[in-house]
Length: 258
Image (cartoon, rainbow, N blue to C red; front, side, top):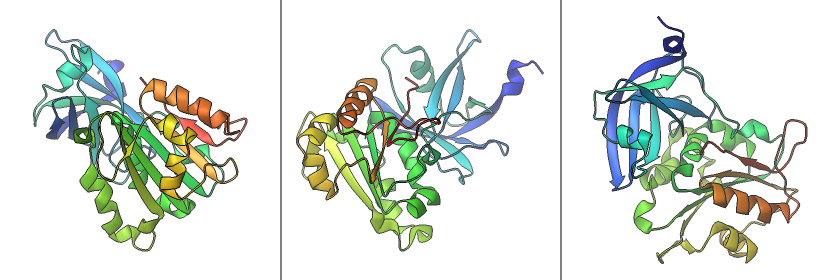
């Protein structure tokens, strides 16, 4: 066994689901020794026809207690990795690094009453993992999931989000969650319309949630488009909400693996 082979396991693709022409989900087997915290990501490898392996980072959608791993992906036109990934079929192999990575986890915050999860596109993935883990429901009084996409058809995982309210292990706490879909390029009944930064600045997001974004009570996680993360961090900084670091606890946590 080579050194590189010692760093990953070879998992089997169990399910592929196409959501839109550019969005799909993958479910694979899970090595018994693979451990992760809700919100972390794994490095996935696909083997190209020439035998070389391409690696990319993907957050787990699945919960730490699930027996499988699930990932949410966009097809990048001409992309070296997603072009290969999107061609995989049930039964094919997918390489998974043995170690999980990332700091978009609840231990970034040592306090807080309300948790805001702000996602665009496939950035929803780590928040679904967090919401399927009991810790977040035990720690926070209110949880607001804000999921922004361009077109209504891109709102993925709606059945899973709705199902959270009916899971036995969340009985008595599921009503802590408020889900706010956002569609930017068309109007949709029941969804907010506009960029996340605009909705924060004009107060519409807080009115819809019935909660104020404050340094005292709010803790915010951001995942998705790098521009959204940068712009939202600036808007929150203007409200005296800062990145939470090991040496300096704060109110904001982000994931940058683009």
